[in-house]
Length: 354
Image (tube, rainbow, N blue to C red; front, side, top):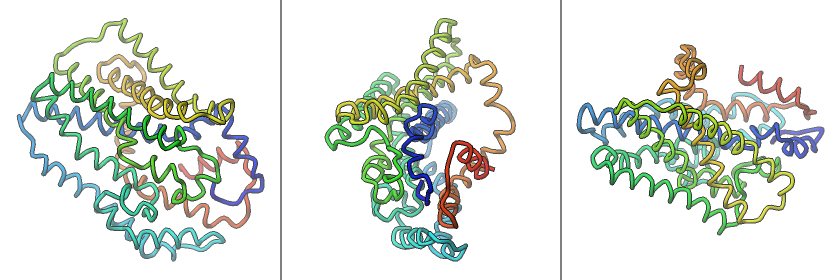
């Protein structure tokens, strides 16, 4: 969307179509990863505490840093050194700007604080996610340990923190008169460094922590079901799948309202939508996880357990690190303006995913 177009009205038409909600509401796909991180950390730590009765959390943090940072450092080094020498193109100035940003703020990435410090010079625009995930990883044991040590207190703490983390985006969206989510108008996302919503809301941990915390809730539920060897009743399973299906569909496709009939939405409408669409999306995904673990997902569970995903899962982190480079390169090297239509979008998506 940041490249030259022949048909500049294409995006304005495309974003109002309900079938394109998966693109206009793609922030929810990122919330899926935050949910999964919280789910896995909660479930695995509780199981480890049952076995060992204690965990060295400082060692846990160190292992994570050592696991993530070397590959991350290599890509940051590429951005800060050879990036501008990789190719040439009419819009290659984009690459030079990326290099300058990384030279100025690389250290914030290595400390995983780049979503709060020097955000106007953020190195690797997608790297904000690593900062959010790492910060939440550090904070989560303060909730997980009480869940194991003092069950009632832990549950009250988890519910209270989740409620607070839903109230924060509501309040900030209302008080700062923000959009309900990242609106993908081409003029707004052409350069994320100048996008007020992206810099002050989208990449902030306190605005994204709700999804992670719901992951903790779902992880705790799955842990208790397995630990107590409890079976879900048929009524609960049917209700769960109905609720999850409606939640996922409504939370994803409801964004179209803000591009069409409620294009001139009020601050209250945006504030209500901001936490609720994430809540319903994450609870829907959370049910799929719980149903799969308790053998109540049928063919969906079999699909998600396929061996091919084991191999692909080993590649996702590296793919994430180089994703921004691929996107920037595709735009910076364009020689002629594009004429976009749905067929062209599909073929381009397939090409880059391949």
